[in-house]
Amino acid sequence: MTNEALKNSEKNEVLITRIINAPRQLVYDCWTQAEHLKRWYAPNNCTCIFTKIDIQPGSGYHGAIVHTGDGKKNWFYAVFKEIDPPKKLVFTLARADEHGNHLSPKDAGMPDEWPEITVVTLTFEEVDRGKQTKFTLHQTVDLALATSHGAYPSWLQMLDRMEALITK
Image 1 (cartoon, rainbow, N blue to C red):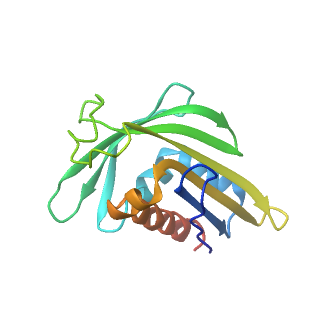
Image 2: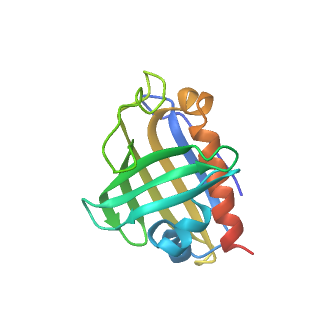
């Protein structure tokens, strides 16, 4: 496993690259199938609940990251912009309320400088004759901001959980 936080040509945005010891289709399925998502899509000491998982352009996810200690829920929604199985997924990600209504970052308890909506691009490339997958996640938010407010470490923990499930 490798992680890289690299500079985007214009901004220092979140960019994570890993080599995962699993076939590309399985890694892709972890992002598009409910039975997989529900098992790993939350950082450590949290769970995730979904009210909607619909993998079609213009549709997406609605759910909450639930903190196991206090039960606090951080609601979000994602809207798919590009779906190219099993090579690429592009979706917007934003804060929401429990009904799926958009919340500003400030209303969701995020810092004022957090973007209203970020774009997440996932790519999946076959490596080693299909035995491994080079997985890349790019999110359009400043890396320092994402690190200081927990988003970047959360992605790393979530990806660790996903990888542990599929490489047993």
